[in-house]
Image (tube, rainbow, N blue to C red; front, side):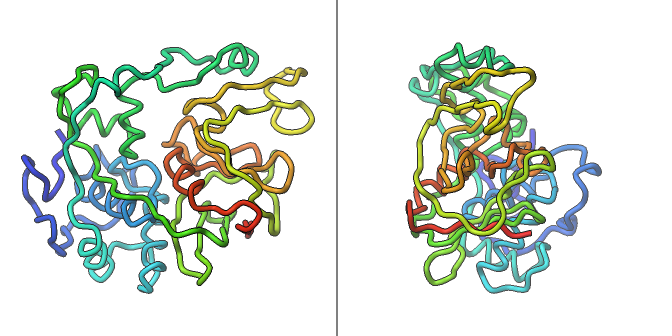
Length: 316
């Protein structure tokens, strides 16, 4: 079992409000890790709760965690270096407190419309009517912004199929509520940062932004609308074309659909900001010209943008 510092029923290496940084807290390469690191789990959760998202919480070091640290440092007017130094850690711990909580699996969690098998071929997807989570474990992992393997490692006593089972999960806190006036999408770094009207950071998140074959826009565009649980129109010649498909297809909605649970429509046709099938691959794989976030980051942003007012700037 992964042991998280300062959590109930775990080895207490640091208290919930401790500002001490473990000696091993230097951000090593994920390739050097044998498993999820307890300090990194706590760090990622607290960054997530500060609305400086590290993407999926997995306990492994990577560029997305460093991006989140840099965003938090910028938000708090600290020196921006991407390292969890003492000043940054003290501010984060005082701001955010404990990292873990318990959750009781409910009947509603188990009675959702799960879809065991989802094909890769868009023509086959178009014949379905819902692209739901594969299992309660996948749904619960996304609910708490966690990697599914980390959720399972923290809770070896359950199969996530029994109502009443209590599980250890990230305490994710409340999402941001300040309306967003401007969004900066940094194509070189792979981040999305949202600002309020005063120029302060509201939230930030790692992002998958276009590719060489399907580049994202340049310059400035405007948000024109937000759709929850959107369908996706695959129009050959207009946007991404899969394989030899020559027909216009409508892909049904769902968290495991091509655009996830949210579509933030931009004034440039066929472009938007949206969710994803696999949160672990954010900024680790190409997109088809759009801006891809985790489903939870896309949902949080979708509640804050102002159609016809929020500007989106793509920078190199």
